[in-house]
Image (cartoon, rainbow, N blue to C red; front, side):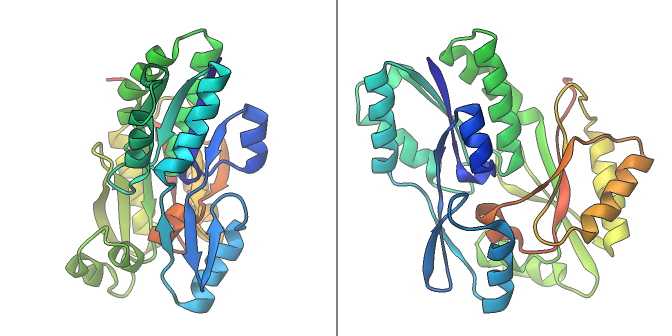
Length: 281
């Protein structure tokens, strides 16, 4: 049997995890003096409310090698193969923990670790694709190989209200954050092919930010054979305006999905964007 593992940055609900038979590893979030397991005991709206109420910057911590080792041991005992699709190694040490655990046991030929070079619902798109490949009868090695080729086509582009959360998390420099926080300046970000946060540009107001996102999508055309998602962090007002523009431009999406705490830590409330697969070149 081939199983698919994701960490909580994939933003799957626990209902989906159970329904799809995924193996799920939570990332820990520390906020207001309390530790939470992302995707398990921290409701998404409540996370963003706490973020605003406390004014504190959350701390995230990757799963330990031992947590992965325990899972890998169970997989070995069952005689299964496992494909792990994990948060970008440029954003977290989760991949490193998994690789260390894999090296600690003599089952490496059955455990495949894919650095998604991505975050949030990009990972969901990749994992759902992997599940289709399992259904199609591919081996775990073949699935991992397909994912390595596929991941550069999965994009997220988004507007965030402020660069401050990215700065405090060490994802961008202070100078860029100061420029981004000027009145009405709205940063538009994306995840680079290397799995880092890239700045597509800074727009004067939300409408121009939407124009910038649409231009970015136009430069990386949508493959309609895969799902696409309108995503947001907290508050749907911006998403509703964005989705109206998507509809007017004839750009389809499957549903609106809320970003969870792991990625929410770095983007804050008020963010919205688009996750999709680019056409093959």
